[in-house]
Length: 149
Image (cartoon, rainbow, N blue to C red; front, side, top):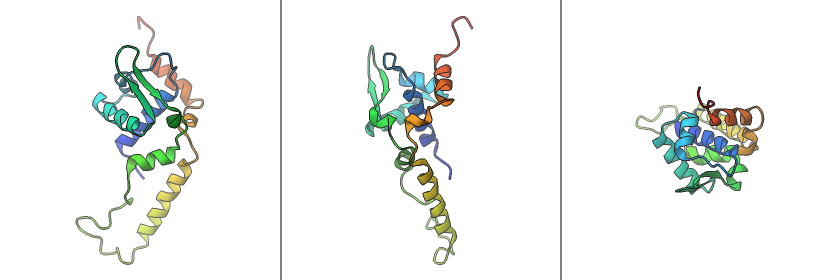
């Protein structure tokens, strides 16, 4: 199974916010730069995460992005399901329906594999994604190079 770019960026944004100190929340632009994604894409992702109650965004001086408690404890499997939306791994009924669709065993096998994929992600939380060694690496890349480099 392949995740969409949107889901990939959303997970990276959540991971970045999971290691932020609350007194210095980053802006969407800063998170986009750290995660090396286009700002416009990051802004759409942040808006969706905010709508889901996973991220809080404050404008203006002293503003920035913070991960909510719900975001920190969110199941990665649940997030991926929500962000990817419904649908089969393969489109057997598309513009040119598959001639095997009435007796195909592949479709069921792929559905089982997809279920196993999500089941393996379900117990994992966003907070667990940033355990060592990931969290310290995220903090390191977020702080950028020292001044004068």
